[in-house]
Image (cartoon, rainbow, N blue to C red; front, side, top):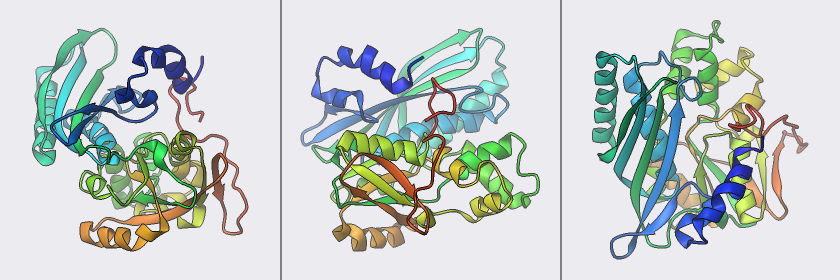
Length: 330
C-alpha cells in the first residue's frame, strides 16, 4: 500500500477543490477566516489503542495525550488554542469508572490550556478504542508558521529535548530495566504526556520562518518542511539536545541509539527555521520561558535532509521516521 502522504495526494487533495484554506493538505492545519485581523487554525488528530497508546494506560492520561497532540499542532503554527470537538469510539465493554477517569483527564487539560469542548460525537465499537479531536486556535492573519516558508540560510532550531518520547515507548515495552528508576519514569512520562509548547508557538511569530511539531521523527518532519519549502536540511548530530534521562538510555544501549532519537517520534517539540539574525532574540526567549531552544543545523539549497557526524560525514539512516501505512518505515 502507498504511504499516507501519497494517499492524501491521490485521494483527498482533489477534494480540497483548490481552496486556499486547505494549504494543499500539506500542512498541519487549515486556515479559515476568523474575527477581523485573525484566522482560525484548525487541526484534527486521531489516536488508536495499540498504535498511539497502550490499552492499559491510565485513562486520564490517554485523554490528555489526545488533547496535547492536537494542541501541539496549533502551537507549531503560532496559534493560541480555543476550542475542541471530541469524537470517541469506545469499546462496547468499557466500564463507567474508566470513562469517569477519562473525563477527568479531559477536564484537567481543558483547565490547564484554557480550552473548551464545544461538540463532537460518541459511539461504541467492537474494535479497539479510537479517539479523535478537532482543535481550533486563533492566529493573527498571515502570520501562521507554515511548513513552506523555510529559506536557504536559515538555522534549524528545536525546542526542549529530543528522543524522550521514543525512548519512553521502549520503556513501556519493557526495555531499559537497567536504567535508574527516575530516568525510566521520566521517559515513560514524556511518552504518555506530551508537552505542547503553547507558550512558545505564538512567541515565534515574527522570528521563525517555518515550523511544525515533531511527531513522526525529527528527520521525517524536517523532510516535510524541506519538501514544502523546496530546500535542503542539514542536521549536526552533536548539537541535538538530549535530556539526562535520554542520555542515560543511550548509554544503556536502548533501541537503535541515535537512530531511535532522530527517527522515533512522539517528541511533540517545535521544530522551526529562523534567520541567523533571530538568534539573540531566540536565546532571550529561551531564558524568559525557561525552555531550551537549540540550534541543531542549517537550511541550504537543494533537497532532502542529511544528518552529519562530528567530522561532517553523513550518518546513514534506514528510515526517516514513522509511517502508518508502512509500519516503521520513513
